Length: 205
Picture (spheres, rainbow, N blue to C red):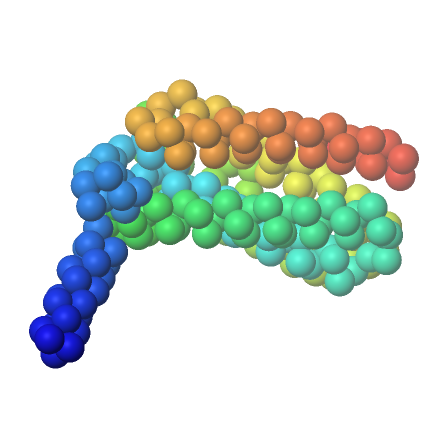
C-alpha cells in the first residue's frame, strides 16, 4: 500500500512538473511567438536601429563621466547609461524571442521608408556622432568636455526622438509602440535639461 501510494505520488508530481515546464498557449513566451513581427517589419527595424543608436549614447556618456567632476553632468550621464542600456537590452531580447536576426543587410532606417547611405565618417544614422567628434570628446576635459557632450547628445536625442516617433506610429506590437512612446517623452525632457545646462555654461546647443 505504501509503495502504491508512493508511485501515485511520483506520478502526480511528474504530471505537475510537465505542466509547469511545458509552455501553455496562454504563456507570455507562447503569445510572443505567435505574434512575432516579420523580419522586414517596422518593429524589427526599429529595434535593430535604435539598439545601435542607443549604444553610442551609452558610449558617449561613459566618456564624459570620466572627464568631468560636475555632478549634474555625471548624473545625466548615469541616467542615460542606465536607461538606454536597459532599453537596448530589451530590444535585443525581443528580437531574440521573436527568432529574428539582430542585424540586417539592409541600410539603416529602411523600415522608415528611406535609407541612410554610409558617410564614411563613422556616423551610421542621423544624430550619431562621427569618429572625429568622439575623439574630440575623449580628448576634452572639464567644462570643454561637458559642453561638447551636451551638444553632441542634444543632436543625438533629437534624431532619436524622430526615430522613436516613427517607430511608435509604425509598430505592430504593443511592446515596441509603448517603448518608443516612452523614448519620445524621456528624451524630449532631457533635451530641455541639456539646453538649460548649456545656457548655464554660456554655450549654445
